[in-house]
Length: 195
Image 1 (tube, rainbow, N blue to C red):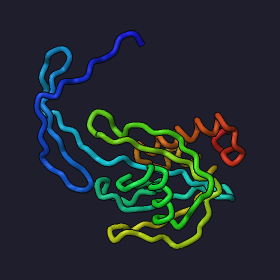
Image 2 (cartoon, rainbow, N blue to C red):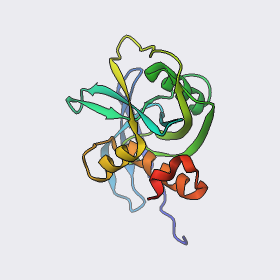
Image 3 (cartoon, rainbow, N blue to C red):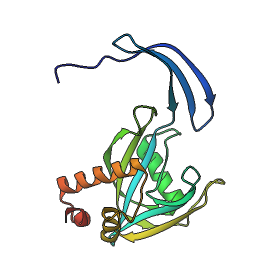
Image 4 (cartoon, rainbow, N blue to C red):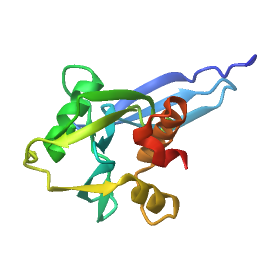
């Protein structure tokens, strides 16, 4: 790419709200063409982690949780925020065990991407856990009510492709990264992705 877009110049920035989960920042910005936008709202959040955990017998580990923003229970990939010390993978390993009781000895980073670059500051770190196995009951936080499910991977993929399953947008991105990984490695445990 020969031409590059210049960054916006921040003229003023203030926080309207801040807590552990998010901060709402309102900026006054000047675009490269001289136009001023005010306010331009940005939501700052910690990075997210998500895992595609495949069991030794070819199931995918999913969690079901009520999501108040959507006002319904959603079945999704195990995920969480990267809010503590350590690397995103360390956080994801803890999340998987706490939410589902599953662990894995074989983890592969799939990549990271912005959750929603226009308005959100965070990235999503995606991981593949192969040969996952249940070793304990979930150890949920006080604010969590989660049910874990294990679904055969081919059935899950068919439901996803047919539109019978709805995912968070960022988890669709994780599935795309998984598909790319499967095509690249030709790992037989992911054969359902190559059909």
